[in-house]
Length: 218
Image (cartoon, rainbow, N blue to C red):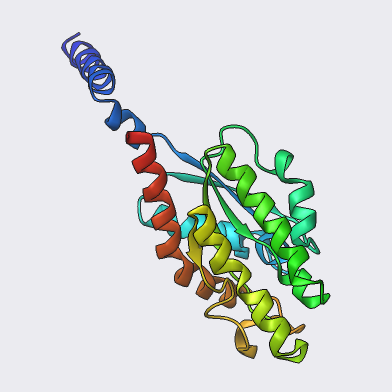
């Protein structure tokens, strides 16, 4: 009986702590993040456990962060494709979105203005929904020319500044152009490459999470 009594007291104290200190209750609630992207997010060519989302989820868990990440990566998607499926890819209750789109636009030589307008619309709609945003940049292939490269690469920092998004300059940082970290196609990272990407991007994702926590506590 005495053990049961103490268990009841402990539960009551926990409930009271949550009631009188809402910040405590909020801190214990997992955040819901959506990774909206293309094959780099989807994990093309990799075992499920080796994709970007599972690797990032594991890295955050190792840091004690209570975050659930949904994989909304679709291979082959352009920024315009991502915009078209935005509403059902980012459900109600989403706290933050990591946007990784534009690589396929670049590979297909799509006019950077088209890419800019699609990404701008994505960020604007997320902003209207009061969802925190992290925008991942991409670099243009040198064979597309200097003018194309400049027009394409400037999209990301400019839109991140416009919408107040957390900005990560280059999603493939840590794996790009390293044949030991890419799959045979020379573009998609292999398991080791994804691990390197996840390590590099982790601090910025932690910044995104901190921003969401701060907003919830304000």
